[in-house]
Image (tube, rainbow, N blue to C red):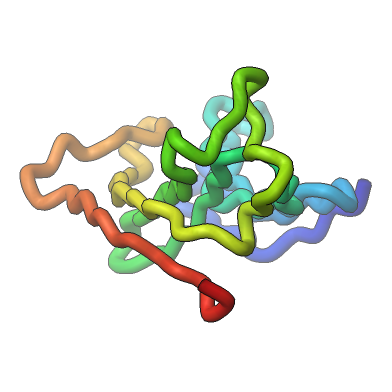
Length: 139
């Protein structure tokens, strides 16, 4: 597993954040860890991208952006139609995930670091939920 530090930010004399990327060969994740007086006090997964198993009828991933001190994390899930799933919960043998029409949903969650170095989620009315159908060029 490889780890790469992306950004270190000092908020005051005692609070520090570190954004880093971990790569396992199967998944790449980005996290932010918060430290107060050199002790880790909070952590948040910002982004996650894993290799897709084409026989499984769903796939999920996360992305993020930082604006004005806010962390905006978009969580995505892409799913196959139930009629394409066999009794064992996998795609029927004649299908692969990349060759079918899927439904994509996403939600944006907003987080901020408070004065105590804790990550708090905003309960905003403007959190967005999207619903998009996708279709491959092969269909």
